[in-house]
Length: 399
Image (cartoon, rainbow, N blue to C red; front, side):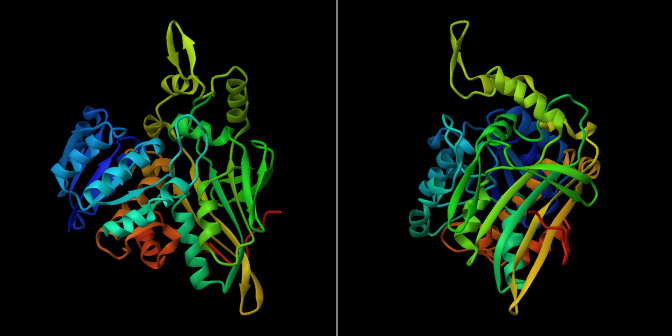
């Protein structure tokens, strides 16, 4: 049916590319582009039996003109951005210049500040609309599936949603004393930033990891979880009418927190440049270089993830609670695509969002988040492509 340019070849990209190749009736051709072409070529070789035609290219996604040149050469129907969040705007600029639609999984953040929000990308809306192209933002799991879950709950279960609690639990064990399950630089910037939640029309900010709760997750058990700022809070506050409060919680083990605090105390999580042996380096980027590559964790990670949303609101003038969630097994993910469940739960929705845009099931010119569209085709595709969802009509609530 069409062609996709996929920028990035890390853990999430490798899952999305595997899934595109499984879905060859939609993805007739893909190009994998990354700063390191050897990684792209190695993945292409693994997928040589796929019916999807695969090409590769070397690309510096910070360089808008390079991206423009590659798009003009390959002429894709859509660009799927699975590079770093710092590169969102340079790639969106290239899509505007070439009038090519765009999909990503994480919102833009500047390199020099641990601040991630949608305002920079939403500012492209009028230009994308005038160009007749679409940008689909945050088509991962959280953000992504959590937004689709919210739209589905509003469509099928509620007349009005008042509160949303997003719970992200990883019960996996990779055996390392300390490692991150996705890009270490992005992960550590996220969890060391101040927390925040949306309540009664305003942001309430907290100290990092200051709010702790415990929850019993199906397939995992009782886990401690901590309130974080997360980008889908911003888009859901804008797009879900009547919402009063949105919070995001993620589980962390004590071993992870102890190591993280130690690294923070000695300055290794800093994003401020320092001089080292006459060269300027950023401590967090150096730490990223010495930590295990998340893409290497697949063979050794066991356990499951459980990610979903708890909703409270009104249906037929009655108070109602409802929960949607997915359980994903690390080893099953690895057996299928060679990656652990954290990459799998992001890579599968990336393929689904790109598919829905390509086949125009979801399409309107401008810049949108996933909850702006009919959730049913996405929910059906989750069941079809490896992330089946479950529901609970009397969930445990968070105080």
